[in-house]
Image 1 (cartoon, rainbow, N blue to C red):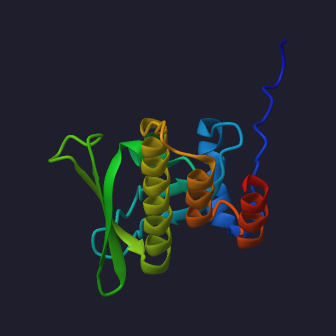
Image 2 (tube, rainbow, N blue to C red):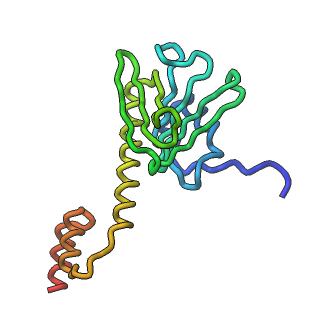
Image 3 (cartoon, rainbow, N blue to C red):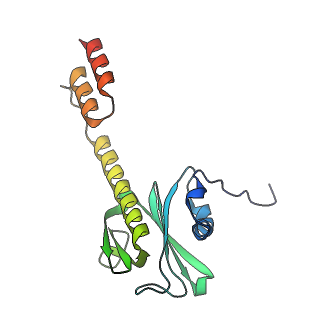
Length: 182
């Protein structure tokens, strides 16, 4: 009941991250949901154009959402924005000479419904954008599957064909199930 608060356990492999990234992850670990997996971490440059010398932002792309840690008050405090992929309309990458800019289009942001983070290392920015795009695609696919009602006219063979086309079953499974239905 009393005593030290139990530290959250990570459900993902931390060995894929370097020491600085693990330090950043430790700063937001209490915000992670149970079984939420961080897939990429990118920190804004301190010295490149568009970066922040004292308090650079850090992006965390998880399997569920995008987290943006924005330190303030000389790094003593920080705000963390958590944007679920369902609330992101689009994410775009603008490559510069040395770094990239990530532009997020979402109703979450006040300024013309876009948020942007400058001076992200190119390779990490590309990885973050790919993860966010995949999250947006997954959330849209899930939404359309839930909304689309099954047609009464769908016979078992038609449903089986759809499952095969979607890649839910292999060719061998399709043939075996088709024989069973016939």
